[in-house]
Image (cartoon, rainbow, N blue to C red; front, side, top):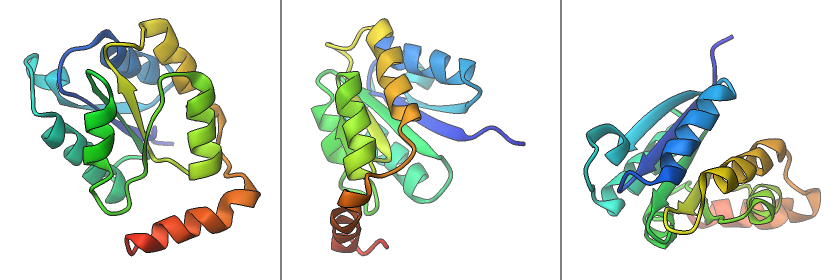
Length: 150
């Protein structure tokens, strides 16, 4: 069986972004790096997040991870792509909730706040939450309908 593809993008070479790539590979995912993870230099957070979101929405990746200084810019930019549901998660409980209650398909993190250890905790929570809370299914469908995705 082919490993699931995850696209990871960062506008700078943050420890959290590198740790996400390494940890996801350890977990058996095929990781596609975007932005500074490829070039080694500062890239546009708008371009990085948009590329990650497009790959996720177009089915080229199971989910995405985006990182910028605060995590806010990449989450906003990713959410401009129809079908993207990026959630800024700087702790494991928020990541769990984003998957369970919002069916988030892109994990955004702060390169400033999130350490390598916390990155692994966040990813463990994200990966362990595979099902949407049935009480939120209607809200998630309403959200998808807002951008024409069902």
